[in-house]
Length: 149
Image 1 (cartoon, rainbow, N blue to C red):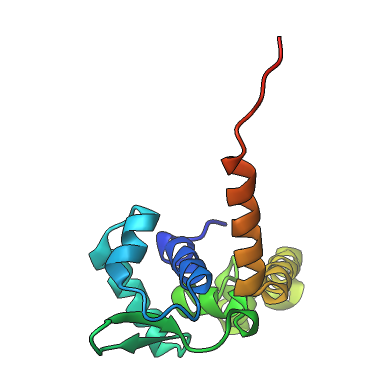
Image 2: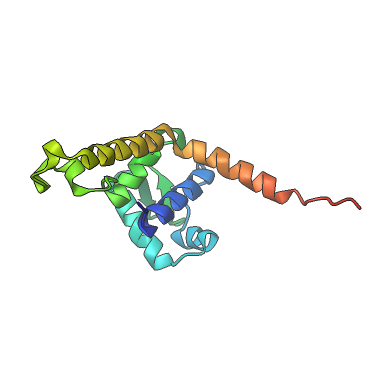
């Protein structure tokens, strides 16, 4: 199973907004520059996140986006669901009516277990957790390596 760019870029954009939380609206152009992605595509993703109630669009002099709630209150599962929908690896997991073998299919149980595991991981992490991980990675990568001869 593979996330689309919608999910991957959307989570990155939400982490970016979380890093800049309480610093005022962040223009989509700035987020796109930092992420090295198309502003037009990112704006499309931001629209989906706004409709889901995860971000707000500020239209005053300092135009841009802000989180609708604090980063510690937004779970990654909410972000992914807003952008990707269900992460079930097979349609029969969410809708048993799509297959007449659901009662006797062992693989459906596997797909269901896989979806639950993914949801458990995504539900256990908040944007604040990702901000901490991001800052740790930046700190680790800012320290130059020292070599001794």
